[in-house]
Image (tube, rainbow, N blue to C red; front, top):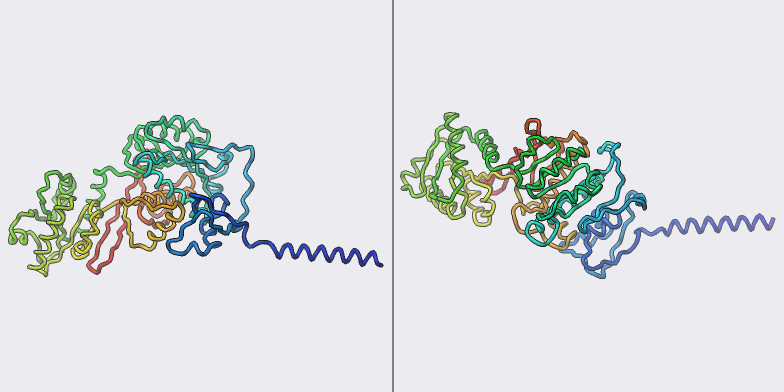
Length: 463
């Protein structure tokens, strides 16, 4: 009887200890001491958690202006799903100091049912402007991958520092490159042909993000080209101008700028107006008030087009229009501008609102947008620096590009063609809309009109 009691007591003690151990399971995985130059993004990747999971475990990170400091202790939460242990036999890919996440080839599984293997072949350094700009763009890609992971889409990033003076074949010989589903790059035209051939050989999609206009887009179905040559941009803008302003009265103002290249656009627009039998007028900044007024319609809405994108002539044109508005307040006037005018918004905003201004562009960085502000704050948290003050913001460009591309590949696999509406992603800054070029690749045809309304708010019209 005593032996039974002793066994019972031992079992009870074991059960109590087990329950106590479970009850004392720590809320957080561990406490992490912040080291010099560590970032929120880097720490989250180190522990296999999302940025949002890390911020939720450390509410103070939501405080405006919060920055990690050396010696701080932060909570590391348990990941929502415990990651598998890495394969010890799989070598780590070290590419110019940027380490990719190791993975085994898995080509037999549809990319829609596994992680997307993403290669980045851009100059990723701080030696010159190209490297610094692409480093910011790459950081945007990383933030997009983290955001996608939070939404259940896994990615495996492999990055190579492909500087201008390097031979891209050096990187294409890396087995990690051949395993990619998509490669983002290159920046330099001389590298497009070898990368294009490599993509054909291994059935890899190539996403060319910047100003390269290559013959390869005409023959390689695996290429996505974001850049639009100016002639093609002009054609798209004229097409959308005709659709939106077909019932208006166009007024072209010659600004006497002998350096301007905008005559190509205004000539193309005038030729299209002639074809459609839409009357228009041409006037000059030096015209008398009477002659200037005579170019405008008292019945229809007037759309003013300048033949320059320079700030000096824009100032003069706005002064002329303000004088006309004082003399003839009954006139309905809108102004149609150029992408460069976005650089002058700080000085021209009141005029843009007053004259119902439309500015065509392939991007729009609305610094007052809560969505933009949140992104810029997260970028600062992750990398301990602000994005460069330029238009467009390249970190946001990288995020928009990668989110659109990788979500599309996750949804449609190798059939993703980047057409309008396929992904359902509203960009922060940089919209994309691809169309196939004959039997070749896919070219971006996205254009936005940024509309400054007299009611003092800004609308973005996507095409």
